Image (cartoon, rainbow, N blue to C red; front, top):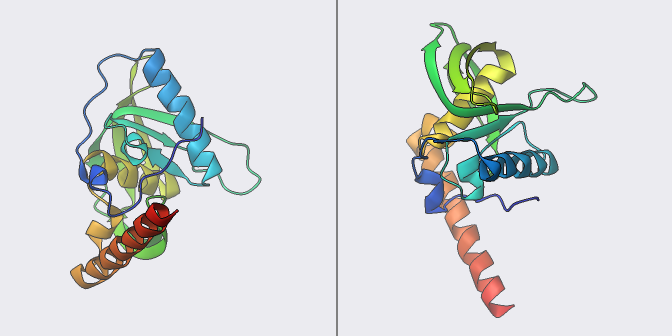
Length: 175
């Protein structure tokens, strides 16, 4: 089922997500819905909080174009180490539609997580996967990618999305 992706300035996006205690039918359904929603958007990654579920679940598919899909699930992910080397790339977010900005992040990360079977794993990631993991884990901690840009730019985009949300609310109410 495709779910609605929350948009800035929705305060839910600032909530810190709680760890998943057990991987049951509800979590498996959530993961399935997250992939459907992410692919439909389309996006590279999605954190459960972006669809209003405050659980530490992330879906990512860092493949490009016609490459075969490689859906990945990270339950209770945590960054255990980062490289000293950083790189700056343009980022966007499904919760901040059509806004892109350069963000500097470590170029490599090691992440510990649980897979869908409940097994603890670690992954060493670089490139787009490393960036996506950092971006989505930020979401689980109530952090948005705009928190990594200048205050002036962040204030400008927040104001723009707050204004758009008010207009959309009025239009819906007038319905």
